[in-house]
Image (cartoon, rainbow, N blue to C red; front, side, top):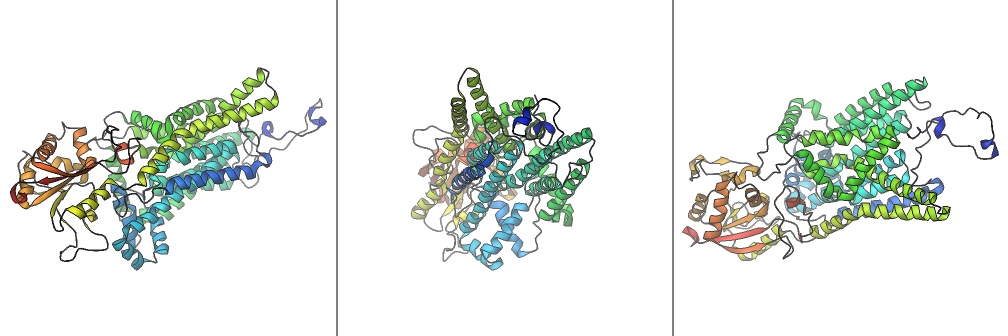
Length: 630
């Protein structure tokens, strides 16, 4: 049975008193298009409980913020995430040296602009931020991470509004709590990347689409459009919220046509005009947040082509998963959101399709289309799934509370009294919510504990400062940024660069196709192809050049051992390195005796397994003894 539309005669409030039950035709009643959506049976009617709901929301937001700020300084002053180190923060700072053209569109620049203006205020403009980044880069990255975390918390508030508008406050609260503790949104709130900030405008668009479905005001179309435009200007895949926007507009249009009305009434416009307004608002918001998409269209188009090529290219990325992308994303749901939430979201999709087809058309097609599109790409990572997390959280919360309400009603049919039924319903709702949140709470808290501890790369550097003489020649795999060999803010006296150690250029290949050393044909490689530049002949090259210390990290070597047939020379290189060198020092991020974590582009970098004790890869420092190293 479909739920009645708010504002239809079926959903208008019943007049209390005896006259309401008197026989005879009911008096005509004017439609009330602004009536909010009815609460789910499990949620109960809030009535005067608004203050209680807002109090619960405040507690959810405070807890979510605590989870996102705990461990925020992980790795600093060095930004070990390659994307964080290369994209938004340095480009926001670079804008102080020229105009606001990001000169980079593989990722849209809205979050870069947010950081640029925050840096201008927080550090006092170009001179202040340049000085801070040169001497204390960790402070700059910390400010950017706080901005990402706050935007993630703002997304939770908007998710509550969306859930309350569609299904009632209880669903909104539970959906916000679920996203607040889910592992992937919590973990990536600790990094200055655009994944979590995108959730705020994306969810804003969902709020507007929910308003179109339930009320159809002009402001709802504008909110949905602005959220869509800002979301796409933050991360291109946020464009998936266009699907709910169009669905809501189409439903509203059919409803208006069926009633013979040209619009929803006061403060509203007809659906065709509303959709046009939403489109104009989306384009306007996108251009405001990404003005050089028009002013430098050639670079913008080139960035889009590059991003599309990278995500759809064949799996040449060493160590990348080989299974179906759809299967990989379905697996990612089980840990990024949680097993019970993932199952509940699927149940919610079926339930809402059965009970409220209109809301189902708003919520169900978008995740399915997103999974199909992203799963057909050739590269996939768990965090790329996050644009559909808000919808998944809404569906999971709805199913949980509906299930609790259905069980309570079943008890009443079996003869339980009204007070017992209400107590049972409340207890079942609390138990269902606890089950829904448990996995996220456990793994997010564990992740924060891990992130609050020293990174293996920081510990290794501290050991090397104490035991490896300054100006020593070292080979460092690209598991750390170039600045890692510097004493930040305190350049080493007596050296041309100020670096503590003389670092071998590890991203310069000198191996010929036959595996022999050919330095006269050297070439620059990307971090993705580093393992393809390795061969046993390199060790002789190190020893002849006096590069006696070789630092290896499992985030690089693990790629080779995950796909040894693709890089047999790299496997031979690591075996030869172990044979000809002594292990000077080694640090593992795992709890002793906990086993190992197979290499993968998710768990190796986001420390999801409970076996992690601290962040970072396994680090091994070798000491060579041949040639000049004897």
